[in-house]
Image (cartoon, rainbow, N blue to C red; front, side, top):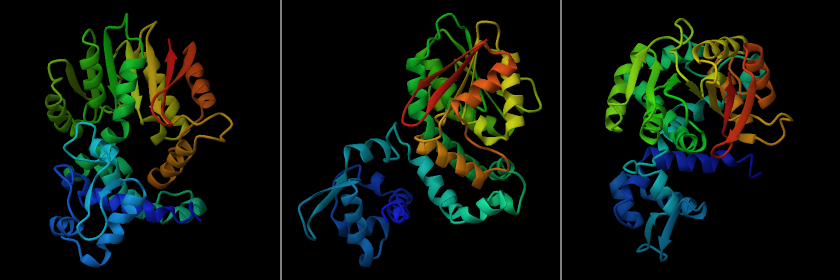
Length: 330
């Protein structure tokens, strides 16, 4: 029953993010009535809404009754206040506005094998996402929030000694390239993505203070050669595509790195027995909802594709949560 009704708690959190509750509470604690006034909420469901978040340990409360004060927990203050540098709510914003309604059609997707998002009636996912700048900005913020912890962990765990150049393929708003450039000043970094993304990336890289160290290079990773670099990364890129397309991208990464270089995929790599990485398996189901052929993969699958492309050694390094750095060495 807890799993079956899990959508209720999920939607309570997604609505709190959508309403900016955690950002409003960042300044100081507020009573329920004050929160209702700030967020323009009807009093009928207000206390149930706040107290369910309290019971889920997403809020704290001082006292009981109408004069009680609600405040963020240390975790929601760090990760769900929009003004916090560790904000990850961008992905939850997208989950509430896009993924939540699309997952209502999971059964239909399982019957048909077809996506259940906007592309049921339009072109491909990325054509749809990138056709509208506000939606594109939301998507890029979502990817940043989803991956930021992994990017920071990658910058600490990978030995970049001996390498001079770095390229993030499908670099979105340039967050990973900026993180790497700031942590490893000896590297020259490139963020490579479609021309429509470039203006957003340049603004964000400048905001991160990395514009002197990161070059935004425009291109299509299926149509154009990848920029040559000692280290090539793809963060949540391979899982968007079918098996043949995955292998095309891996072969192109092999061609882009020199001997001694490495290709790194940052994704929720599923355990080979497919028994334990629930997040990876759910994200793979999300690829059914979102794409025409995408899926998440096991470590053995990744190793097989990379060895077929010519890579000699494969390694997996845990990052945050269910995510790993899958590394192929040339």
